[in-house]
Structures are given as C-alpha cells and as structure tokens.
Length: 159
Image (cartoon, rainbow, N blue to C red; front, side, top):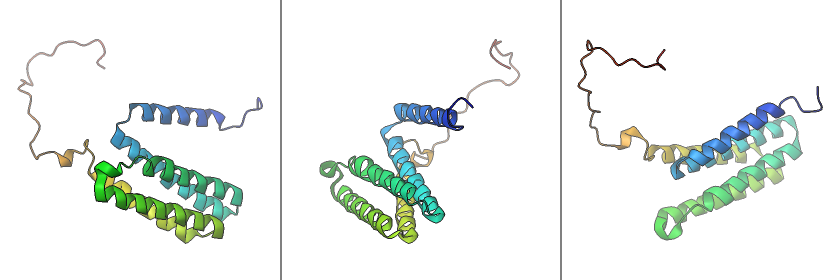
C-alpha cells in the first residue's frame, strides 16, 4: 500500500523478539537457539529445493552452514571440553560438508540427515540444561505455611 512489503512489520517484530531473546538468554539457551536456527534454515532449504527455488535454497543452506561454523563450532572450547569437544568439532565439520554436498547436488536426503543430527544434539543439550527441573535432586518444593482462610492483603493490580 505504501511501498512496503506486506510482511515487513511482522518481520521487524520477529527480529526484535529474537534480539530480545538473545540479550536475555543464558549461554546454554543461546546454544539451543543456534540449534533452532540451523534446523529452521535447513527446513527452509528443503522447502525451497522442493519448490525449485535454487537461489533461495542456496541462501538457506549458507545460513545453516554459517550457524554451524560461526556459532556452534566456534563456541567449542577444545581445551576444557576435551574429547567431547573434539568429537563435536568433527561432527560439525561433517555436517557442514554434508550441507555443501546437498547444495551442490540438490539432495534432500543430505539436508534431512544434517537436520536429524542437529535435532538429536539439541535434544541432548536441552536434557542437560541447568534450568531443567529433572536434573536437580528429587526434593519437592517447600509448601508455604499459609492458612487458606486467612484474610489476604489487598492488591490494586490483582484482577
């Protein structure tokens, strides 16, 4: 209507939401967000390939590779992480090479392979989250000593 694409407002809103999420996220949550970004980029690449939009497919695969290389792989600390970090580094390198192969050969199977690997890693990463309640000892939360019949303090903001 005014020379702007119809979804520009929605895209700007989504970008602000992502930026806010990144600013407030813990380091653990940031890794989960990287996994999500790579998974979505690969899903987009698969859809673009199915639609025959080769340029958009290449762009989406490049985005996934950038997330893997510049986010996930770059965040590894091989000195502290030891063998696990070394193995993840090799796995991320493998994923990037499979994505390059998928891009060059328009191969959906390679895209799905990497997407499944990322999902598995994300699931494992979420399972060890410091925020995960199942990781803490099985101690029930304390029950507040409150009389349900006692008068409550009034609150102007309560509905």
